[in-house]
Amino acid sequence: MENNIPLDENEQPPSTGQTPLISVNTVSVVSMPPSEMLLPKQPFTRRKHKEILSPKIEKSKEQSSPSAKKSPVADKRISEFRARFFPNTADDQWNDWRWQLRNRIVNLTELERVLHLSNDERQAIAQHKGPLPISITPYYAALLDPKDPMQPLRRSVVTTTGEYLITPEEKIDPLGEDHHSPVPNLVHRYPDRVLFLATGFCSVYCRYCTRSRMVGHGDDKYRFNLDHWENAIRYIEEHDTIRDVLLSGGDPLTLSDNRLEWLLSRLRRIPHVEMLRIGTKTPAVLPQRITPALTAMLRRYHPLWMSIHFTHPDELTPETELACARLADAGIPLGSQTVLLKGINDQVETMKKLNQGLLKIRVRPYYLYQCDPVQGTSHFRTSVEKGLEIIRGLRGHTSGYAVPHYVIDAPGGGGKIPLLPEYLIGRDGQNVILKNYEGKLYQYPDTDYCQDAQADY
Ligand code: SF4
Image 1 (cartoon, rainbow, N blue to C red):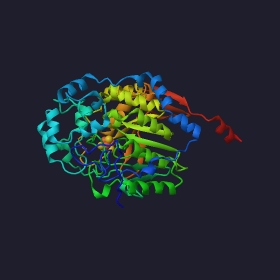
Image 2: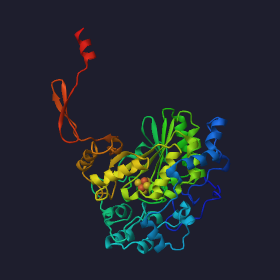
Image 3: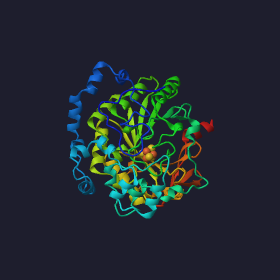
Image 4: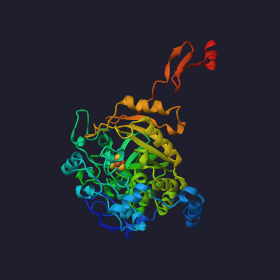
């Protein structure tokens, strides 16, 4: 079915570079839901609805939060980058997420303008074909070291020839998501929740992306359009065991407010869907997207949770802090997801700084992922022992809230499996022997008198 539905009036023409599968700025693949469907049937009472939507309340909440009141004062890296490469760009352009999307850096020529590329980077970018293209917002490009190809953020978003080395254990779909997909773009791996892949577009493409097979290109196998959304919604409606829907992709926060609201409202209407979640990297790479209008819309669909993909403490800028403050002030619980990456964040001190910084901006470090064996990522993968070393270096040495769950997403679709350093050493009679964060041994009396008493009868 063709979806010949007009663009949102606020949407802008496509940016340069590759055509996104579904984006705020093109109808080439997916189009706007019909306008009558843009007016969601609210699940709230009239009074509640009014309270939640009232711009007055929204404004006063914004004003009451010291962090949300801050204007997005850029850090020094960003001011210098703007002065050098975008000297005629006004603040309202730079702070407009659509401007950031239209001006993404998407090819070798544009990248060479802002970075001194190494031979390896230049060769890798020139050689690239297919999904996971280069794409970096001007905002995020400002955080990259123009001279050092080994700088952590730069390594995470600039292609290197390491991507062309495919090792035997790597797979294009390491988590077997396509095998757990009853309808296109919906993954149903756990009994009570589903992963809804809403888009194949991201503003910035991470070089280690688990879904590199489907993001950033128009392969027929991975198209994202209204028919797919409708099929996925129908599947969820027909399965009343599904109580939790995680919207991901690609990055769902690259959808326009109207499209995202259409989707959230359709999901919210399903009686057995208890909670909605959004997985996104937007607050880290395109914080301008988190506008008061977006958060006013999102707060209509509570309980709504958000998992934000952070990689390194260098991402914690005033702009990102403001974005997270707006989301938190809208009542959205924020958790972070971080992929453990060799040479990028595989040091205890780096991870501690990231996690402590996240707590300061009201994001709870939630998952630390062992890097999935996706094709072309061997240069990013650490040993599992490295992950355990990081958890050992955090647990007890900083606030418990700053210690994420270290997990391996089991290849083939086994789900997330938590990994912990050895804290339980063994038993001594009725005592368990435990090792604390300093390596000292303690005993805990592991007795259950109720059970023992019952056994005596
Ligand atoms: S933001 Fe997420 S989906 Fe997009 S490229 Fe990065 S890891 Fe992949």
